[in-house]
Image (cartoon, rainbow, N blue to C red; front, side, top):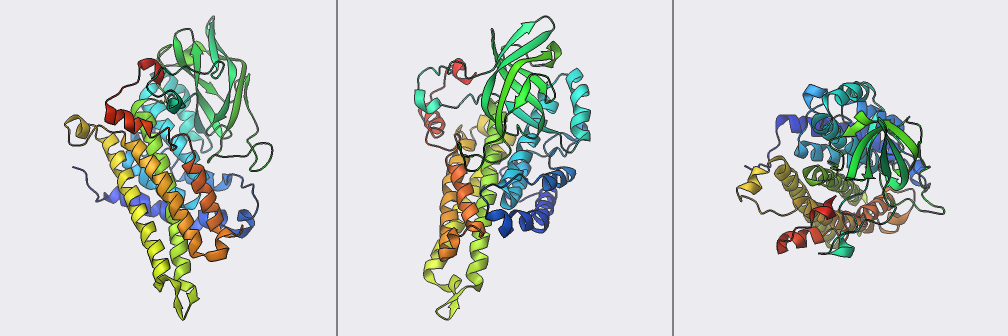
Length: 409
């Protein structure tokens, strides 16, 4: 049964991470000297501390050395991290989710023996999926075959006992910090996924985009472009079967989208909390502005939006953990992860703007947190998995339409 009462373990996770965020992340992430520059480098020291707390291996099974957290618990933790710094949360969320998929489900026993000790023994060992999102661009070919853009994917060719990869990807999440990549490449049989360590000759990670310059960074986390030039990996680095890439499909992709929504929610909560705290100390007309009807209405709207978003995220996460609820028709077969992601992005952007209004003119000052919250919310709002095209997945579920198998490859 869907239950809103958290377990003692979930409450302990939430409270521990919340204390870490309040005592260590926020004082650094929201310091005026960091807020004023456009460039905000990843907080590497705090990323290491979070990894030492076990947040990097949060979803990894206990048998493999992780915490074995389910989807709902992961979302609870990601919300707390998102309230502190969305970039840290994005990196940890990506590694945690991939760690579970790779080591608990997809790797062979030989691959697990080779890579798992490195992953669990190194707090800076992060993971990345280097491939094309199978749903990307679906809005431009709605109910029609999706033709992959020519040259848009790396190509792998079998040469003796090795795979040789060539090509480039414009953006890979976690690329700048990852030590192991799951690379999705075109082969004669379709899409094949290969495990590629960072130190493999022929693999190069480009410099990440600057916040302002020839290009403008419009993402969260630690991503960058990648190139492959005669990048050679052994044949036993093949993940799954040739031509049948197991990545970025089904439940695995849905869990990642739901976690992003939870990080987005944490950002909205941070903006809301800042507005509430300020409204309790700012006086106008002989009383604190939180007692003014205009401010009270804004805060009430923020509260409603955040609570609705949290309820949808928790429901989406719970349903992914309990697919039997859809199988027995207790819940409709809708893409709740998409609903949660899209609604949260829209709601949090509105919350950030309302919170900034509570600060008046100070809401746009560069040394104040609100301008960062508004900017970060805009990045979430305009991401590929939260835009208008993403909503088409909901429309397809309503219409009973299923894309051809080739579209999901």
